Image (cartoon, rainbow, N blue to C red; front, side, top):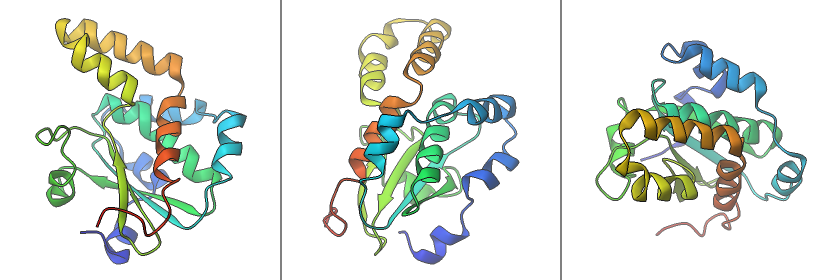
Length: 179
């Protein structure tokens, strides 16, 4: 599924930002304002080994805008972690291997690979707390009201939940991923 060649051919986050069309101002605005809290940078500095993060996304996805800027900031502060961006629609094999609940092609999805490009885990499409709320309470609301509350949640969280959960992926010993 993932090889060094496939990974290397994907876009870096700065390259992706230059290509986004939908939500362009939002992507760029959030990127400029995204600053990782000191405690998370300190925790991140403890990540050992070489890691490759691969994010499946599309520029129209509001959850992706509100999550991937933080994943990119995390990769930016870690010399042993790289992030590449893959189009969900152009990579159906990756997407179909990471379906939300086994059925939904929800994005973003962030996959973690060790130095051998074996997948050790994946995250997405939202932080656990927010995903739980969307599935339990959020679905009772109309779409506009639900997404207004989702946007408010992301604004209050400031990427903390996303970064903490991605750091959890990077705490798995390299080579101890799924068999």
